[in-house]
Length: 311
Picture 1: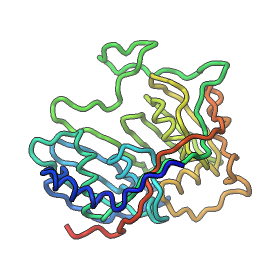
Picture 2: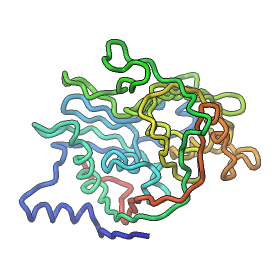
Picture 3: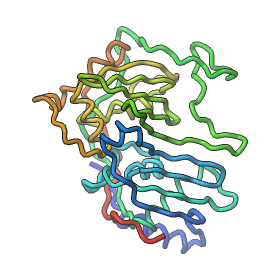
């Protein structure tokens, strides 16, 4: 295990950069409020709406957890963050204004400052060898259907990468970094730079319709059903459309990974490690999950406050 301890890293960073005459980039102004916890009723009633949108100089965050904010701020996967048990469940809404001259690409740096200042976030990094699943292409070959190119997109024909889902606008318009919504029928829709997902509850589980998804999006989707992190070993460069049918236990695992309090119990054995139907569901597309060991760079939270400081 390689261990690098950075005590109270976020707070210390403020003093180090100040000593060299540099101030960490921060939002010009930011309002942070606690949001209602996610629930099954919220999803089924069509009231789920969470994610991040950047519109000109305004950044709007709806119902995101500190762990999800850290994903954007430090560009890591969800399974790379280790912290208190309440981390996925506590959610916050933020309205912030970028300083003059700041760009969308600097939003992660500004989120780092906000997390340090308003939540007193401090963490250290550790690299640990862990049990993982490697997403690989089967010997029989890939059977995924490539997404159709966006209308009017150049250089995105068959055999080439599909057009990006959410490119940074050149006209100053709004950019959706990630957004999750539900409708009154109980379906949950998710969109991000890595692909679109529509989840439809069924009698014994859930159907997941995926469009314009790259390999990063596949890893982000699949790991939530499993007991170990997933690493991408596919070397896939395109975007793809596919459908997965997963079981009731997988549906509950997904909800709980999002921090929902789910009172429903799965059938005996359905939630046991290795029992996920995802393993067989992806094989129809020439993909499989192989158990391996791999070093994972972790962000270990040393201190974080559940209640943000006053606006």
